[in-house]
Every structure is written in structure tokens, then in C-alpha cells.
Length: 425
Image (cartoon, rainbow, N blue to C red):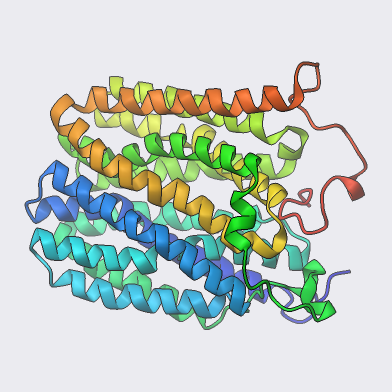
């Protein structure tokens, strides 16, 4: 039924799963252990927040730049290889830097190559899943498994070697991911499996992509709500390890906290891939936002590492619901030929723009007002996003008993042929 199903029919999926598994090891380091590396160098909380925010500022441009290059050239694999090579070089430079100014400049350059890999990997996963008639989550979940594995093992490694080895571990993981890219089968922007314009000889889209996306009011409202909820998410992400250190937690405890969050999202991913289509996207996004608010409220009350580890398991019903539903919503409102740019724009809002603001002001709030107020502010952002998503849904559909559910229709017509979320098999 699907082309390429004989003789190594799933080799491209397996290589991409291995790549996802390894790639998210760098995410563990950059997000959770780099702040400890900065404090090891003697930087203050506001300085750590500034370093955290300057990188995302650079990545706003890099995400859009590299995604549009990928869309125009019709290749994802080659762009990801270039980005990983850039990470390798800049990480080597970072290993030799000790001053605040030099670290801030080099980490900004590192982020130029770091952030764009993730939306490109998601775009490739969506296209590979379409090629085989599989669910996108069946590939993406290996990123969560990789994050879980590295979150725990890196904690024990750094406990034995010390935080000064953070960059060395990062170099090893980046090099492994770069080697795996040679086994990937490229997913063209106009893959013939999606029935797109390549088969008809139509040239790649050359201009107007970003403008075409941003002219949609629905897209602007969605990204506005995403930005608000991302502020709380990034505040927690940037200062979780420092919060645990303030409770005298060891690096291995930090690893367990990260493991709790990463593993908890996996069953939610699969449940939503199987049953999520029964529910409309905006109510699910509102529920995810409300769970974020509850999660951060509990974090403001927690005072022992064990409580933080338990609260981190709420990552499943906050980020787990939000991420899968947001990707599904994007693939519905943004056309296929602009998908890499659309996902890059989502990453800009979710990671870069929010990271800039949350890192800068989050560091000041954390130092001047304390951890409790810090997490109450994050709670407020999540509640605001909840109101935004729910309000938009109520405006769109009005009242009625079926306003939160999709109408039951025949499976063949339940979604476009190129949807990354076909019914679970």
C-alpha cells in the first residue's frame, strides 16, 4: 500500500528515531545543566538569566533563516548536518571561555546553530511519518526517551566528574548526532508521498512564505497565546536546576526531576495520537494551559526536592497535552509547502522570544522576589493563556453541547491525506 515497504522499508524511520534520541541529549545539557556550568564559573542569577535570554534572541533570526533555506533548497538533512557541525565548533570555543562577556558571545553563536535543528527534525519526522502512513508521535516519542535517558545519566556523570565537564559531555553527544545524520534519508520539502508540487514539476515556493503565514488572524492569535504560556514554561525551565540547588539537591536529583517530566509525557503523547482527534484543538490547549498554572502554583509551595520531582510529573498533562495539540493545530492552519517555516515560527515564539523575556526578567524576579513569587508570576502567565485559548474557541463556535468535540465522520475523510496524526495502528 505504501511505497518503500519492502527491503529495509522502515530504515529511514529507525535512523530518524536514533537521531531524535541522541539530539535531545543536547537539549538536556543546554536547558538544565548549562546554568549549573555558568554558576560554576561564578556568574550570578541575573547573569545566568541574561546568558539564557541573549541566545534565544539570536535564535529568532536563525530559526527563520535556516527554515526558509530548507524550504527553498528542498532539503532538511543537509541543513541539519551544517547546524550540528556549527554546534560542534562553537561548543569547542565555549569549553575554553571563562569570562562573562566571552561566554555570552559564544553561547549566542552556539544558539544560532542549536535552535533550528529541533523544528527541522520535527518537520522531517512529520514527512517520514506521512511517507509510511504512520503517526508522527511514533517517531517524536524517541526524543522524549532520549531526553529521559540523558537526563538521568548526565546527572550521575557530572556528579562524578563535576560541572566543568558539561561542555565535554555536550561535545560527545553533538558528535554522535552528527554521525547519525549520514544515515538519514532526506525528506524533501515537496515529498512525492504527500502528493505535492514536485510531482507536477511546480517549482519550490520562493517568496511570501512568512508573510502568507502572518497575515492569518487565526495564526497570530494562536502564536500570541503560545508566547504567553511559553513565558511560564521557560521561566521554570531556566531556573528549575537553580531551585533544586537552593534546596541542596545533588546533580543526580536534578536528573531524576528531569526524568520524571520526560517519561511522564510519553503515555500522553500516545493517548492523544490515538484519541486526540475526538477533541477540538483549542479546548485541549486551554486544558494544557490550566495544568501549567496548577503545576507552577504547586512549585511555588514546594520546599523539598522530593516534592519538585513529583510535581515535574505534571509535565505530562501540561506540556504533553500542549505540544501534541499545538503541532496538530499548526499542520491544520498552515499549508504543507510552508510547514518548515511555520514550525520554525512556532519555535521562535515557544523558545526564542519567550526565552529572551523570561530569562532576562525571570532572573531579576528570582533574585529580588524569591522562588515563591517567581513561580506565582509563571502561574499568572499560564492562566492568561488559558483564557486566551478558551476565549478564542468560544468566539469561534459559540454554545452547544458539541462545542468541545469533533463530529464523528468516516475515517477516510477524518483529516487531510498529509496529516501527521493518522489513526493509531
